[in-house]
Image: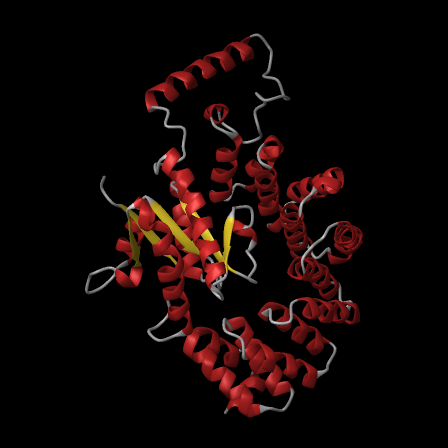
Length: 422
């Protein structure tokens, strides 16, 4: 039985960096042991035996490997690009995320393995979970998940539909506007032959939000979290249909919603209200639903922190800074080491013109692995406002290392920062 290829899509980082160490740990402790019994050759970009790895090599592996394992930890831009390319192929993939990190909305509706390398037991759990995914792929095969219908079969079916449409038009009738056979706005005859999920994904990839919104109602019959993720994609883009579908679903299914489904809905609705500058409108819904959900369900501290942080962001967007601060501090009690929550508290303190407290929060997150260019840009500003130029210069030096363009932009458009760093 020939070996199969598994391509690892993950942040890699420079030699000896924390990112590289984490990537090596995940590959060597989880991925390789999990896949060994399935006869996979495990490949990562920096391990390809060539003098130089070019983009074409990576794309070929992303598109043609039997399996891709995708580590979304750190929300690395290159990882998300390659992740999107893999999703387009319809071939098997397994998404991974380090414990205590959150998924962005783009992939929030896709099952993801949460891993923890802090103990032998948690590593073993991660291996077994990965293997449970692979067991399913072994049964169903590693080809694309499309229907596999031949082009000639599809062409014949389209011809039959076109003839039927023509006869209806001649007789003065029109196709039904309801039920499973309804034609969606912007749909073509061939769309009748395709699952609504495929139509939706193609519309989103092509930027046709109206068409995606038109087919959304037909997705209510698919798996719950997939429907919520689809509605969430539209809501996050500021689409009213998507937000209304989410609100209606939460309202009518509230008693039976589990945490994962509720999290997807609340996260997307929060982005909708922020994108459309309707935070105050969103607050009335969030205060009702989030408080009640926490009261009725046995949520973990991390889960409660996530939900309260969504409410905090709307308070912040609505300019209710004292309320936002109260929620921010509550969130930090529940999840004290989450970098994004510490950052949020710092932004609230800054809005409340409390520079020293904002600085203390920045000091706290700067000691955590995973600080990105947004965190560093904010740190430079806060340190300068707090009168700590030495810390500002050190933060700027780190920013210059990981994102020279962002560093140059920072001093180009802010004269106070430019003068302070001279």
